[in-house]
Image 1 (tube, rainbow, N blue to C red):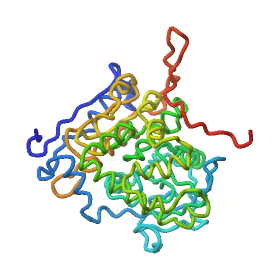
Image 2 (cartoon, rainbow, N blue to C red):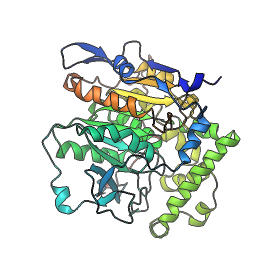
Image 3 (cartoon, rainbow, N blue to C red):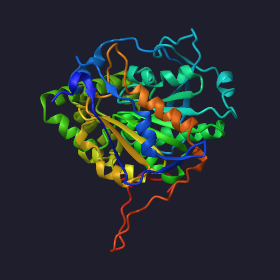
Length: 423
């Protein structure tokens, strides 16, 4: 039944004893209470009455908040995942836009980028976008706008390779577990801003990548906390859910078309650096067909289903050892509810899931065009950055769930082995 006039129900899934947090005023709280306090009532546009309508409303070409960026091209430091990727840093308004870049975006000059390092203590947010998106995405700009306007935050967006008009320089695009670029950016930020607490937020596919990254890093994660918004979590489940309905196949078609365009934008590089069959890619219809033609060939997965199982972040939830909030909608038609790892979240005191009954996929449209997800995201980040004693959080070592038979379960073990090329 439709929630009454767009008023969504909100529920929280969490460990029986959520992570205890010390507040700067000397009192104690816990992660669940912080998430609850950060989450306002969810009153959405009643005319957008279910997840499909909410999601499809995103095609309305509103301009959205005006966020200005300057871009830096990074050389990858990974032996296998070579080439370059781009990071867009939020800046003060400027007019020297680059015609070939997304709106309000220009490159850093070498001198300006060299002057970025700082010993200030402003919190810094590192953002990951959704499939085939970029720093220009409207849902992303809505989410970071209050932080930017406050003047209290620094923000940057890591663009997936080939996205947001970035070049592909080695034939490698990205996949749902390509955590290497965000890991490099986090390490770079820690080195160049030694006193800044670092935070992360990811959307959709970027949420899956961020969750995998945080789980892989475990107790050594350099981020202070993270938020995953609209995370598909279990890609095998989401793929099957999309394929079994007419509307689901429509979403698969749209996403597949977007990925075909992405490859077409980099045709010369694809033909030069890869053994991908460009013509076959351009003849696919659905996203799973794209993954069959690109991800399996690029990375050596035997099937796209094997890729989905290996790249999913549902098990990585168990490895998280920083405060982590997941924000999802029960009626999300893409990151479907059945893929949410409820049991894993309940086992980990570092994680809390906030689930709204309405909202669609990265939508949450309110009357007037506002986006509800902006408020819990910014509220949570501000509470963690300015009210919680972050240095008092001492992560525990990640358990391996040893059994009576001396077996153990590693939540972030890859089936895809990344070999050392020097061996």
